[in-house]
Structures are given as structure tokens and as C-alpha cells.
Amino acid sequence: MKTKLLYIAALALAVVFSACENNTPYDTQSPDDAPLILRPYNESGTGSFTYNLANPDTPLYDSVTVTPSKYTTVNWYIDGTLVFTGLKIEQTFLTGSYDLLIEAVTQAGKRTERRGSVTVHPCDTDPYSAAPAAGRHCVPGNPATLDGANLTKVDKVLLTKDIYGKEIVHTIVPDAGATDAQLTITLPETPDGLYYVRFMDTEGKLYGAEDINVHNVSVVLAGYEEFSPGKEWTITGVKLENVASVKVDETVVTELTVTATSITFTAPAAEVGEHTLSIQNADGSSVYFITADGLMDVAKTVVSAETTIWEGSCVINWGDTKVELTADMMKDVPVGATIYVYFTVPEAEYHALRITDDWWSHDLLSQVDGMEGQPNPYTFVYDEAGKAAVDQTGKALVTGFGLEITKVTFK
Image 1 (cartoon, helix red, strand yellow):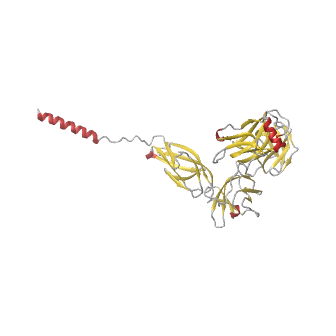
Image 2 (cartoon, one colour):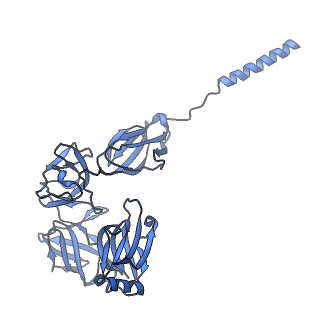
Image 3 (cartoon, rainbow, N blue to C red):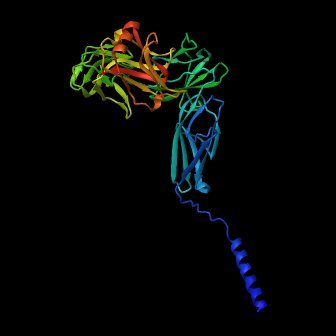
């Protein structure tokens, strides 16, 4: 009996040890699984695919976790150019703003992606020129002016189709008279398209300077989106010197003042609402509009119930850069009117809006912080005290920090 019990115990132990030896992890990954990007991270801990790099010597440094990890390749694209393949990138780029796409693709060809952006800031002493919010646009044979900093260091301006500046389309010597803040180039014959701008100093070092759009046709850039019937209307663009007529719905206007960059005329009568707009050159060719669908020969324009006080582009920085609304500009704004402030929110340390008088003594709109989360346009009521302050000091100032003010209207 004792021998039998010992045999049963030994057999039980054998079963236990056998079970332990076979208890290995079961790998559930399959080459047929759909890929997933599970965990982005970066050194700041923000978990974001939007990167701000301090200068061109600061690498884009980040990693991704994907599944099925054994069967997935990760590709990193900057503006559509494959710049790295692998889970962890550590790479530098020239100064500029770029679109980022991270792609995970399996051996079976299944894919997923995440998108973001990369902004590389210049060093303080680097020659640099930032493209305005509306982009740079130029016509071959016509001068194009680039604004920036340290521009007297620029020996040559390169146009290239790749982000690294290796495939050069044109090497252009700046026109005489460049200053640290501004230089001018004249483009030779160049096909339509978007080109990277790269600066080269006398030692052959390259610097990023965003991009430029080249047009070989007449193109409208701004000022066409809305108008006030019976008021002066100015539309701006490139290669507009041969414009002969402007058509709003079925009304054709031929009394125009035209230059290479603008068309000015008296807007025709029209009801509040949406209208069609087209423009023709003297030879019958169309002037094109830049739209979300590309270059179009017909655009939509609007007669707004709002009246424009000021329109343009101003990145406000307290007393240094601000929009000035003179008493003459404000004279038609009645007490009790709603004032609309249109803006965009570029990258900045913070975003604030304040509207005060020219003495900074009375606020028409007290400071509003966190404008990235506020309605756009931002509205307030023009009251008796605000009107009195503008009349007394001569101006209203649209100020604050980190916002691009694009238009101020009233209704």
C-alpha cells in the first residue's frame, strides 16, 4: 500500500513539472494583422507628433510602438519625402515648417498612418525669411521681395524641389541693395509649382527659408472674398497688369485701375449673400484664383452684412506691432454696433487680445487670454465710453500677443 501511494505521488509531481515546462508565452502576432501605432512619445512627454525644434542642429528625436511589431515597417515622411525608416528617428533638418507623416506598413501591405508637423527655428545669427500666412507667390521675370533677418549674409538664393537642397532648379544672385531685413530676387523662366527656398552664404552653407509658389499665369491672391456694393474694391495678386474686366454674376466692370499686383474699381450693386466672380485679361485669358481645389477661373465672393474697418495681416506684439484704427476709420461705427475681430493663431508663447485707446487708458475690450480657445471672429459691443476714448485719443489699438489679426468689421 505504501509503495502504491509513493508511486501516485511521484506521478503527480511529474505531471506538475511537465505542465510548468510547457507554460511558455503564446505569441499572438500574425503577419496578416492590421497595423496599429500604439504609443507615440517624445522626450518632453507630450506624446505629440507636432515638433518644435530650437534650431537646425536640434534633431527630430522620437519613437513609436507598433503592432504587429515583428511584421511592421515604420516610415517617416517630411513633406512627402521618405527621410527615415525605423522605430526611432534622430535626424536634423534645415530651418522651416514641414508636414510630417508616420506610416506603419506590414509585410502583407496593410498600413496605417499618423500626421503632424515639424517646425525648425533658425539660430539667432542665421539668414532667414519666413513665408507670410498667405504664402509667397511670384512670376518669372518679375522681382520678388523676401523679408527676414540677417539677409546681408546671403550670397545666393537657391530654388529646389527637395528638402535637402540637393536638386537645384535655379541659383539666383540677389538684386543689389539687400539689407539685413530684405532682399529681392528676379526669377528666370521657371515652370509653375512650389519650390523650397534655400539661402547660401559665401562659405557654401545652406539655410532654410520656407518655400515659394511660381505662377506663369495671372493669379489673384487676396481681397476677392467679399465686397461692399458701391465702395472701392481692391483685389491683389500677381501678373495683373493686363486685366481688362471684372465680372460679378452677370455685371461686367471695365473701369479699372490696374497694376502688376492689384485691380481697383467700384464694386457693382449686389444683394447681401454669395456671388460668382471672374476676371479676364485683354487677350481673353482668364485670371485664376487660388482655392482649396487648386487654381480656378471662377471664385465665390460675398456681400457681407458686416462693414470692414480694417483688413490686412498683423501679428500683434503689444506696443511693438499692433493694428491702429484711427478715429476717421471708426467714424461710421455707431454706438451699440457689434465689432468683429478676425484672427489666426500662429505658434507663440501665449495668445492674448486687448483693444484699448491710443493712450492705453481705457479698454474697449479688456484683455482676453487663451485666444486659441475663443470664438473666431471675437466680438464685443462698441459702447459710449469706447467711442469717447477713440474720439479723445484719436485711435483704437488692437493689441495683445501671439495672434495674427486679419480683419476688423462692424455690424
